[in-house]
Amino acid sequence: MERALCLYFSVVLCCLSFLFNARATHAQRVQVRKPATQSDENTAGLSATARSAMDAAVANLQQGALAEAERAARQAVSAAPRSAVAHNLLGVVLDRAGHAEEGYAEFSTAIRLDPKFVSALNNLARHLAERGQAKEAITQFERVLKLDPAHIQAHYNLGTLYADAGDFAKAAEHFAQARKAEPNDPQLALAFLNVAYRANRSAEADAAAVLVENAVGADARGLFTLAAALAKGGQYEHAARLFARVNELTPHTFEVLYNLGVALYNLDHNDEAAMYLAEAADLNPGPAETHLRLGLIASARNDSINAITELRHVLERDGKKAEYHFLLGREYFRVGYWDGAISEYTNAIELEPQQAAYVLARADAYYRKGDWNASAADFDRGAVLDPNRSDIEYWQGYAHRAAGNFDRARGYLEKFLAKNPNNVDALASLGYVAIEQGRLEDAETPLKRALSLDPNNIPVLYDYARLALKERNFTEAATRLQQVVAKSPSHTAAHYQLFLAYTRLKQTDQAQTELAEFKRLDALEKDSTKERSTDEKLRIQQMLNQLPQ
Image (tube, rainbow, N blue to C red; front, top):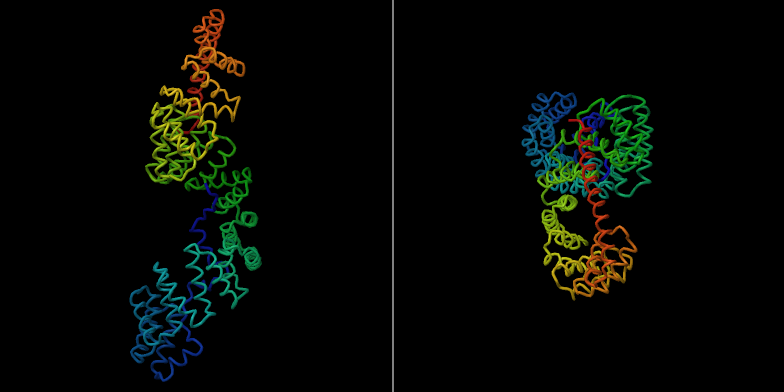
């Protein structure tokens, strides 16, 4: 799972204006002042009545008296219906008052009256951006820049739009252009560094971070916002240091502790991360993300009980994310609780049926459980979802072999070996399938090839000996089986096959010796298997009993 910083928007929103209480962000600034030359041209020849109404509208707008501003702006439009400035001003007032469509119409009228009126073009673009029409807004902001290449608002807003679209290179460039006019503006510096790290402009971003940090001083909200921007850019060490400062200024705050914990987690400082995240969870147990991080840290420590506990807490709070079910399934898989793993993988698949990783994980769990047909079916489904996976035919062949679907297993293994001719396991499986199908001549080649690549491979040696038995070459079979038991004295099946070979060769004493050894090993194996099965069930049950209900 990608390590990323999850910020709580309620905190971030309250911090956005941390530098200047009375100053709006650049994205919120609406240009109502008359541009340097165009305003003179647009207002030239206006009557005193129109000018007076416009001044009154601006004054009321600045004081927040929107009803009075609207009345004055409408008077200005009535007195000067061909004035682009008057229509633009009315559009600003209407937009600010929440009458978006009427505002849009006034901006459009202003642009129709004066297609090069930068203020109206900028306001129209901002109007479109605020309503999610990003493509159209970008087009309009670009028109603004063609007329006024240094327009701060247009550069800022284009930077914001490109950042939202994930084009961090373009976003950084527009924020950089905006900063040329106000290089010491902390808000512009913050906006720039939000994207600059991801645009590979680290040196400039570092300088911007220093500027912002110096500007905010000991202001906790400002430091938090800067730390969040740094973390978003992957600068976790600097971010952690700033979050720690904020924690000293405002101790025991959930959002600060959470983000400090996540920054440390991304630095692989898991012990410290767990400490801060645990405190955050104690303060506010509600958010799923805190428990998710604690679960991932516990998993990294091989602390399965706590990992499962935390991941279950995650799903109690947010059961609609497939990834969370997958993570819990993976944790169950690690402890050998196959039914739990299969159940959670199934939940993940139901939420995201096209995710190959979930299907293949369930296929593996089915295989470990011994449900070969279900495993083979999932491997086949995974192959459809991810046909470019290089080893998929190997797993399909292996699962179908275990399920007894030998024709299908053979086809998949041959496809895999065509691309990977020296894979010993695949060669061995192909030989095994040929033996089981009675195609003894076909078994010889892959098994000999596998042994040439790995002469001490016990499973391959054993199947090569079985091949000799099937061919009724008992002397050769005995020789090969002797190699197996010499390398693996506790190979129960090899001792039994040796008993059969010696019997066929009428070597009674050796046959009885091998039979006795087989019986001894078989009894031990059955007892061991039964004991392991009992221990495994008890272990799983004990683990489940330790989990909170």
